[in-house]
Image 1 (cartoon, rainbow, N blue to C red):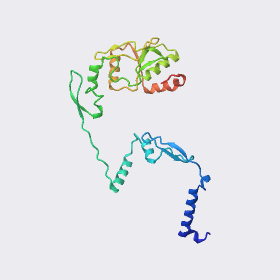
Image 2: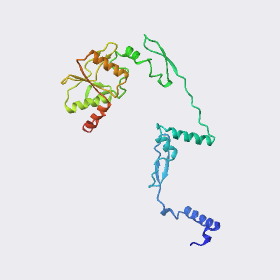
Image 3: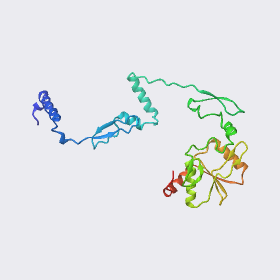
Image 4: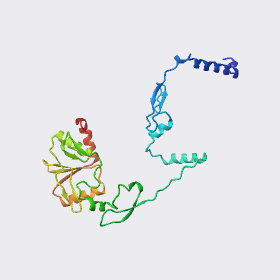
Length: 259
């Protein structure tokens, strides 16, 4: 058993002073691992900090780690209640939520002109009070008002004269080329009365039109049903997201310029 005087305040204070002096003199430098410099990956911080080589620390602080990883995460109701209870016990009141008033807009359909209300963030994108007004007004355009917002443009590796509206269309054309299927890009526009419809591809060998879509919204469903009603003799196949992902898993490793 160690002598009792090792625990006395006088001895511990003396050893502390000696140890600190030795650290400052550099006598213990060889016993420690050198630190390395890292940059905090949080884009709102990007500060430089030092850490041990064996340490798993990635961010400069827990606050930066939380900001980086918790962006867009949904906090469960039970966790929010616990945090609220702790804040109340600590005397901290969370800021009151302010509900912004809805913005009043006028429908751009000249035959409607109905006044409707939308959230403030929708004022730039919302122009019509309903899908029916959108179809009636701009449905005759080649590209529908709900067309894909994917990367449009010419793909030199496919055809320098064709402008694809989305990466899905371009990748499907690459797949057709790989397996040797002859295709035509949007060769025909069908008049559906209140608007027009131009399918993405036509396969002349099987006499079938192909439409590739991420999902079928209300506008697309109405257009698809109207097309099949007016042109029952024409074959139309719609490739949705599930089928497209299956094509991607099988052919992406074989196509160098896949997007």
